[in-house]
Image (cartoon, rainbow, N blue to C red; front, top):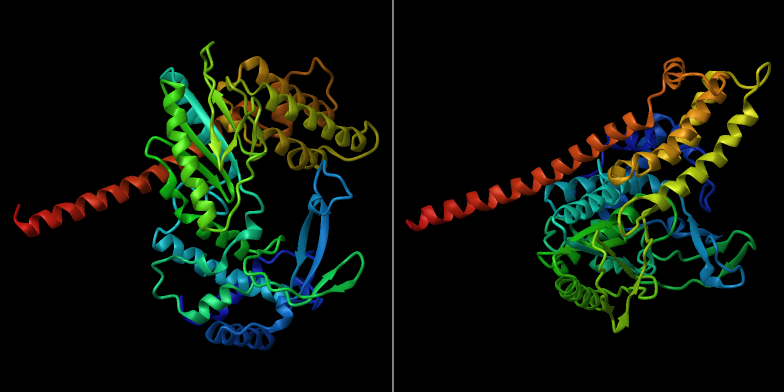
Length: 464
């Protein structure tokens, strides 16, 4: 962790910097950095290494332009209805990317992040978490159990990160200068400028603040901060965590047993949030009972003395669940969004004018199909009739691309366009998700084997 950065790491970070990003107050763009010569890159590398060694950060890198973005469905006359987006220095983001890559390597090497955390990790995704929850619910169905899931809403989690406690407790090799540098992005900007009004605001010192906007470090640091949350998870309770989106799952023969186990976790979670300066939004924290039984038990779950409400159609990571896992609500929403997007294909297509089939195919794949495919690896329990609703959208899009009539065979249009059926793509994505899940399980089994091997070695030394 303490080694200086080399030119290879700088050039690697420059290659993945995206063009078209808005610059910070210094007006330096990613395009400017990408076209620098070798001597200029060497100067920047020297600056980064000096900052990394001493822990000193340029004051200009702590400045940010704040852009308020109105949240969907929120009133415009309230301040908490806006999400502040911070435009910071691209130079700072470049160095953060290099630090973040080293930090992620360190976390993986020492197995610091818990397996339940899938946020911003390689080979892990929101779809994988949704599929994991769906599989857990299906397992409960097969055992004729009630599966109770609590959807925990952490209020302003990124804004409440306590940066002094955001580091691994066993990190002896991470010296103070490096810790100070990782705080670069978490430090409150000394001079904030609101873009719409261009008015300077008085600086204030915030001890825990992750600027909301694209940058690598604020994605990784909260995962470290929430690392010890696994201590509150009871053995019979499973957890699915993506960044600050937490789901607690418990499958039991009796709803009362599941209530006792989950209530213990919620009580410990309330204590954890108090100790770590976090807040659970009890009004948005809900629960649902997944069961095939006609007699659904009534539960009373509390967190911080607030009674949780039951929600029959909760939304987690953009996917709507239902008590019997029929996916009717989710498929209905996906179908409406996809049909609305196919209108663009109609506007681009024409028999004697407009875009050709190649361009229409690219538009469909990138603009329409992505909406229909999100999360559908978890739709194993959806009926064939239900799944055909989105298949009809693809069939309609195929006719637009090929100019075919309604009687044109679907297989022929798929062959001409080179597109697979959604059912085939769903099976492939399901297989990929299963493979990633097995890889995670294999890592857990490897840890168990290491523990067993250590126990055998210890017993052998004692001569037992």
